[in-house]
Image (cartoon, rainbow, N blue to C red; front, side):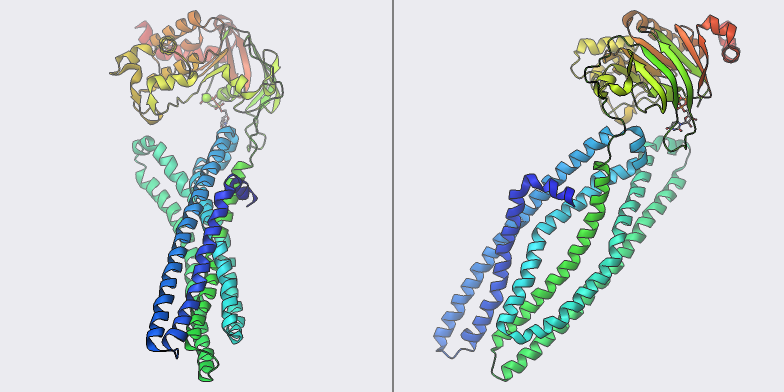
Length: 583
Ligand code: UTP
Ligand code: MG
């Protein structure tokens, strides 16, 4: 809640105007029954001449009308101020949370899950907004209605206090009992909503796979389960809340009857006017209504608390991977060294994925990394731009530990082409400009040419202005790979990392790419993961990885001599491709 108040600060003036306008509205509401009572007592039952009575009724009626108009204006203003505050606050909160999410490391976003982050950014913040808008208005309204109502009622006749003494505690007990049971459920509702969002998110992004495997039925059932679980928890909450209001209504009606009874006896005894009894009925209704409101507010508060806790969790998460302390460290050459590096993924109980890695890549060298699937190649290169931090040893660039660089500095000099090409909706040029926003058309085209992408881009109807659909769905796998390569090249990095990024290219395109890289990016260190011998043969050195360790390192011909694993891979691939190549 303290967080929410912090977000309220910049808008304190508008936030303050909201309850002020509300005070105006409630004051008018409190005056009305009094005027009504006067009309009855003096205007209708009064002993003055008839035309004077009529004048009194009309005059007071006009007052009532004016007051209710003022009250109405107050109500509208209060609602407006409340809404503005809540919207601004939600906007800020969403922005900060999103920024935070952007800075979290892989392991942290994985832990939250995408679905949950989406819920927190949307639904949870909306809950907080609703709470702020309501509490700004309702706290004041209920408070004033409650206290003002009691004061007015007792002013009419102290005996009415008796009704309050009995009815108020009953109402409070009812509200407390029910809210105590409902409050913990609100957090659960949000958790269930996470699950629904996760299923939706997974299936919408993976729609193609779902269809390819005709898993629609299965996934629909999975969604049904999550959705039903959400509904059931919601039902539980609603059942509890459904009891609340009718119970409170019973207490309220009984209290009204008690007021009429007490008032009636007093009128009988000529110690009270009929109009005052009418006003008392209105006041007791207002008082008990405000208690009902408290019930509603409790509900909103518990909901908002549950949501605020979830948003706070995100806001309070410190990125595990953050800027290093060496502000002046710069990457100028691109020498990459792994010194006795070991690594395991968080949450895998220290089961090592990489161990005892010692590897030096000189500036401008092209190193290939080869190894069977799951041996740790991606994990190895992920340590260089600090997508993860190594758990043992150190990774150095130009002699400086990667953990000492500022993240921006480090990553701006490293071009990474991920194993799975991710493009974004926008034009071809916009996607390539991810590498460098300021790049000229010339530079974009140049990068695309090196990446062997220019030709197919020119083939599009609108060339570089062709729109790409979400996630690059409108491109072929090889086209996506080459766009991602162009994007990385445009960054003018000192170190380029290709994670199996040429797997979808035919051999001749791939060899053209290699030539272009060699000639255009001569000073750039290239680390290239590949599965095909044909792709790695041209590299200066090849590192063969087996079960998380480098089992052989050298040139193609050296490895053919010294490494049995390398020879095995070579012959098995040549056997498969031999038919095509030799025949
Ligand atoms: P890698 O992702 O490093 O393997 O995972 P790789 O060599 O690049 O494999 P391919 O060629 O792309 O298929 C190495 C090991 O780390 C585990 C995987 O289960 C694998 O055994 N791993 C990977 C995790 O535990 N968590 C992850 O987030 C990623
Ligand atoms: Mg991989």
